Image (tube, rainbow, N blue to C red; front, side, top):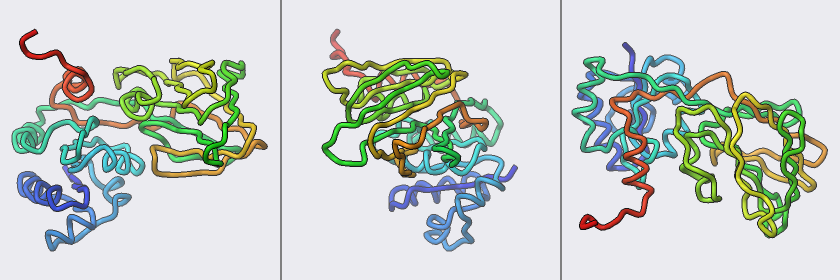
Length: 269
């Protein structure tokens, strides 16, 4: 079993990464943590291709960056602020890695979003693809088609097409629902629609989406990759062939929703 280790570039993450490295015995180290430890380093792309499993020490951003380069199973350890996509907190790393080494886990698959602007293919999105106005402060008119049927036509700041895994991120901030990450759906969430005439829509991921804009816009994949989108083009959205795959010790999604996202009642209640 060949494992990779990718760390957020911070002192705390590197210190946790060092402990993880010694627990698993050996691993392909990403360049930054490799430099910190004085070992040979590899790019995320190389680790994504050659490793059988990838351990990630960091937050949601580090996870999304890694998932853009691999469909191999990942096990994220939280050293970020919220780390909703992570599987365990840093203090739980040692116990969890022992279970991984003993093969006491299962693999959970989650859908990704594929996209094309004209003939140009976009990187697969694990969280969301977002359409923003290219002109700050200006309203963008958007038309959404589902299987070539016009479904929404509105003006606003933009539109989010989210996976279930991304439902707890930007989509949630725009009023979208929280969805179990194992579902096969798309969540369509308008961003600040003018006069509130558009609302979130949930559709099966087998559907094909098409989006048109009336003015120049930007398409953003997982908050990292940005592409120009003009009124002469169409944006096509579909379920990607590759999946995001997570190493799971236990199903902790609903407990994370409660602990990290909920306004909880006082213990006395």
